[in-house]
Image (cartoon, rainbow, N blue to C red; front, side):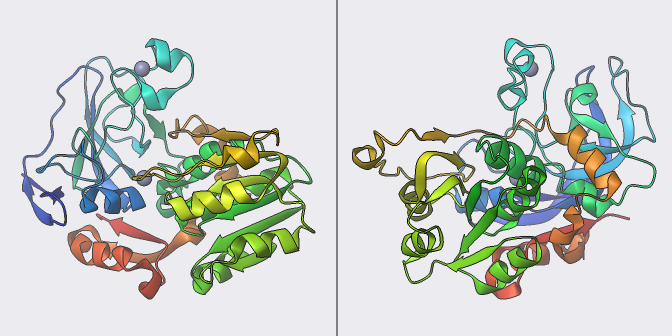
Length: 347
Ligand SMILES: [Zn+2]
Ligand SMILES: [Zn+2]
């Protein structure tokens, strides 16, 4: 047996005993988790927003660990290897994977902590191990590495790449939580001229300033659009990255786009939004959506190793994995607790 964080239905979670996972399919690995974390998506699940997650499921889709066992078809990993677990499991050979859209793999995608048991546990079974795990560099800082399971690739692929950030662009990021900050860190690879950070919380905005935001906009008074227009001389922004997932923040994004602008949606939306085509139809804009493919993990690993990307800056709280119930309380009260990412360790 092992201990794991188990979803019990909306509003219900418990740290309880579950059977230790075993290799089931020949491409599986079983990983002993050494570092994990909690994602905003886990909070959505606990609110009951993600119907594919059923009671009894072990949550978590981010993690670093040591391989315990591998199935007979796994060729690149063996017991004892330290690995980074991608939040996306991908077979690498189905038609969708061959298009590079691993998030929609026919037999994978976002399944960990969703349709199969996840990483907020002492052990996890990872399907398609060869194409879903990454060897950790020998000197790897696990806190930095676990940020590459989901939030760094998500901010980068869904926000920065889909938004086509170019040198000299004016970029607005709506939402200064971990994903928005990940977009902020990785947008700077492309030398935008200005990055405007928009959030309700002054503490998060101050963090964004330390991470490279050039202007901070508190949207709590409902004047974010006016402030962006004033700051850009009425022009609007080249790229608006939506990193929250509610109608208000999507509305801000569509109202601040310059002609030719790109609106890159990252947020997980639970409600419909009103699309203002009566204002946008002639403005040459593009709106993109995406689930992270984590195809950028190898590139991000290199940038972390070189020190050009420092994702461990996102870590604000640390808990032993046995204290995960307390960690959820802290993360669920992020504004009051000034929490960004909480680290869970299983030494
Ligand atoms: Zn996540
Ligand atoms: Zn596939």
